[in-house]
Length: 178
Image 1 (cartoon, rainbow, N blue to C red):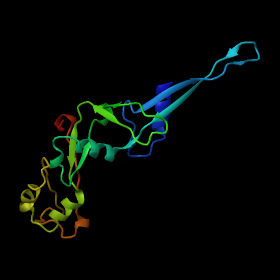
Image 2 (image 1 turned 90 degrees about the horizontal axis):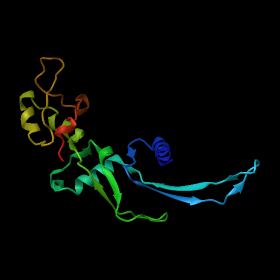
Image 3 (image 1 turned 30 degrees about the vertical axis):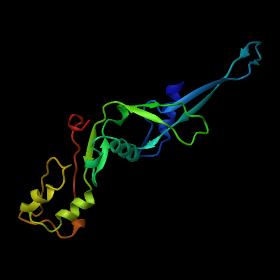
Image 4 (image 1 turned 60 degrees about the vertical axis):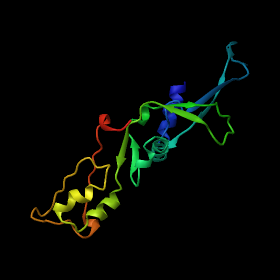
């Protein structure tokens, strides 16, 4: 029953939100038995379920901010690649009317720094192709980069940032910071 309730809840979530593993409470209340037409008795249970969902970006930055490397985040966004593997555990079971919850998160989070694309585009607008490495040296979160120009003989990035597109690939899970 719990897995069915969670599956239904996950289908109603807004894009960009998720339910951490273990972030719910279920209480069962026995309901009064009632006779049926065939002479048997119907026994019912009422399930009271509280599910705690989080915005992915808030969750990721909250957990990243609680780590030893929080000072290194800078203007980057930090994403957790394996957030579904982390286990949420209440420190104390919240009541139905609780406005705050207290919890721990267990597991090996794989963090990935995502550079600010707008800042990156503004940084390279109008520069010469040969100066790209110099600009990128200020972005610790970029492991490697290549630039493609059209037409191929161009030697500078366009001065207009709107004419620059950036494609970012996240590293595989094994390269994230734990």
